Image (tube, rainbow, N blue to C red):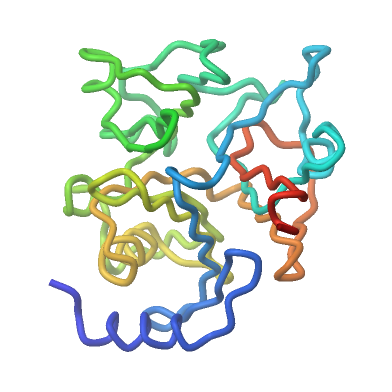
Length: 248
């Protein structure tokens, strides 16, 4: 059930001006930036390496790599990575698997099971618990594994505590039940896991959501005046915009 506070927050979100697919919205005492995408309409991709095999590491390098007439629309870092920026878990780009799925528990947020896989098909998206993915892999053109899952079939991750004092700037992604609505979100101030997960479930109405990171959380949304900087990152999730189509 959506709380009254969440309804008020969502109404405020709708009243706020949308900027390049992204909107700033308050929820339960904190402010978030939320970017809506449509998997059936938008060109959503994952990016890791250029055509020379070098890891992009930044939004600007992804944008510069696109052909004339295309540009990076909105984007965020999309999963945990090692010191060399290689993905920690499953990573698939344009049908090619670079890293296999990891199903064991372990240290850190990634190993806080259940974790999950964000999977993009040709016209739909889904978030799948990692062991379910391993047992019956779907056809993913793009996929990135991260963890923990924030929302699992409408329920919050069982390890989250409402009064936890573990606060961070956090980012993640959620998908609706039919796989069309894809929402990237980042907290604009430090929040705990429970708060961030409730954003996806209660304010955005999404039954499944996946945490991307809390130590490195960045958003690229030039229309909203955002192009977060920092040291190089690993996988990137974003939209590719065709300038001709946009002009038409």
